[in-house]
Image 1 (tube, helix red, strand yellow):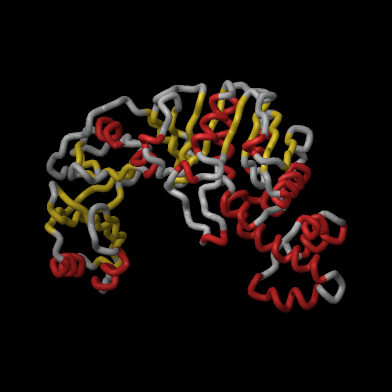
Image 2 (tube, helix red, strand yellow):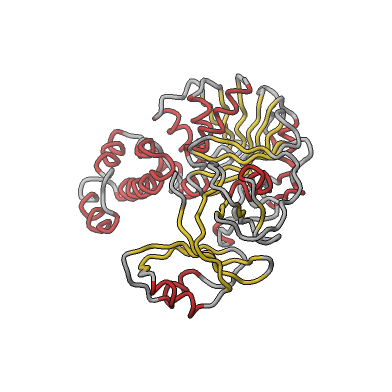
Length: 393
């Protein structure tokens, strides 16, 4: 889709088409397109169908707003989930900037949440189509007075008129190169070094980076925050002007944060009655020791992020399981044990094991009314299987 085709969606005819296609079934797209082309230009029908598909995909990130917004394929894929953008915007609001330069603003997901909190935002992107979508989103959500879109190269944009800067570099290769994730921060577009320079030029700043960023790549003057939403790690953010050197894990939707205290690695100890599976953000932030201290536990193995303890201690930063069996890994023994207990549903979790959960489930041939969680891991270096059940809150 080019800008001219996109602009047709903003006409009265385009708006009627989008309203008609709100709940259409993509499986019947050919028949729908044929019917609509009897009364509308083919180019407009194609653009409207594309936008309708994108809105349906975007609903998982943006909720009901998706059906008022406008997207590009990359915009749907690369935009921040609305709940994460809202959390980050709330942090910016607490810092107090009146204006933010949003570099690599995309279709405006982050800028929208900042503007909703009364912050003036200039969203900058070099793609004319992406900028057109961002402007349309600002208008559709009645935020145009606070959200301005500049079509420019962020490498040349002057952020001097803004109190804060947010940078969201592209972390995927172009479609012509397969669209895969980029792991080297200097291969981001723009590179992390540029983003850090832009961040240091403002009073406050944040840089969205991949959650797998090496800790050694985090600047010393930055706070690093890893964010999960519903148990899935979504991103890491480097904050400037906040708490240099701090490492933080934040779990949404609860909004709870765990801050690093520089603890040594937890001791390795025998398996206790309970096993704690730390949230992925906690693991990425290297804060397993803080969880172990909170629950009074230690590690099953020095290389595995499972914490074991003798007591059930409520914590939002890990899921607790009561362990009933600890056995050396042995498939036949596991099958016999589950058969004797009439276990028909098994949740398989693994860390430090080469066994694939789906393959294991096929081999177990389960039947019965009961359920069980099986952990495939190492205990003090030995391949092991732990059986248990989630601890109810």
